[in-house]
Length: 238
Image (tube, rainbow, N blue to C red; front, side, top):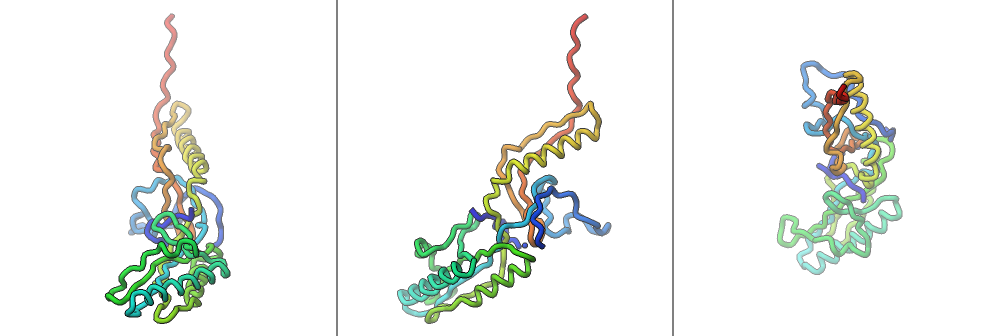
């Protein structure tokens, strides 16, 4: 699974695993709600790491009047794009949450959609590339690759340059996230002294994700914890 397209987000180089510890110096006349990538319901503790990849939208459009010829033109351009991607360390993918590779074995399953006119069709998919260097550098590589693709007949290759980050199998980080939550709960309870402990809920939830910076994602489980006084041990009767 490649993953993360929560709003087709975007993405120098550090991929260190760490919990969020703050957002740096802030303007007092602003609020946290104004911060880029801020999310109201996201927990404080989670795993922040560099994304594994970036994807960019790609559309193949043909306005040939004959429907059969139009479909053939789009398919031919798509097959050429699959070959070029394989030779250029890119990958054609499709999906709204879990990304699936587009291959010569399954490309015909992509729907050819109406494109504004009765005699115009399109296929929509994405190009995935490994996130290397800065967000801009990766975006430029994707753009250059798409611009290198050739059409066929009246079929053309287009892009909006809209991008998103992708994460390979977010669930593999579950234990790291739980360890960060447990560590923070223990540390917070200790601030209140030895007479306090903590209880945690929600840790059986699924791993969720959101974008944290142009290159980083924040993986989390929607936990909650409470700091409470330790129960006194019952005294034995005299």
